[in-house]
Image (cartoon, rainbow, N blue to C red; front, side, top):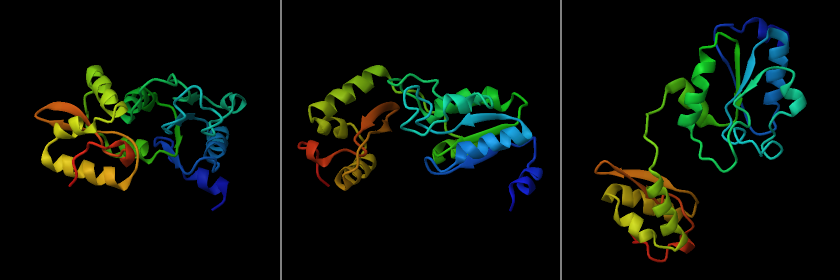
Length: 194
């Protein structure tokens, strides 16, 4: 389908969602649509929200950002914690602005949260984050794993054994704990085995 034919069929009242891999031309397409039909371009990429990662994430250039209004690009400090829930809160006023929205990103989770909703999970308390970071840094993940219920512990151990990296959070008796959902198995000397 030709571009002109495509844009003629776009409903002004509905946001346009453009998803795809990094550097696949999403931003260029969004700019072309904005030039043709008007509208604002809204970021839905988890990394492009950070201010210092323009080149690494193929974020639109400063010159490109002057061609149409851009929102939620580079508005978060590099070291700040930012979640899909934060993004949903940030995009809500834009959604109700009455402008044509061209939402662009490669983060499927952001699009899924936008179209299907997201459970409102409270933020993790700072003391829990610090305690978890300490346990990970000294290799005492067994302390964290011991705080989990059996089903969550087993899921955590399966992910530990697969060798991916990262942290997950789990609830036990109404308290949020960090669990080792995906960590480097070489650092888990004291972790319980299945």
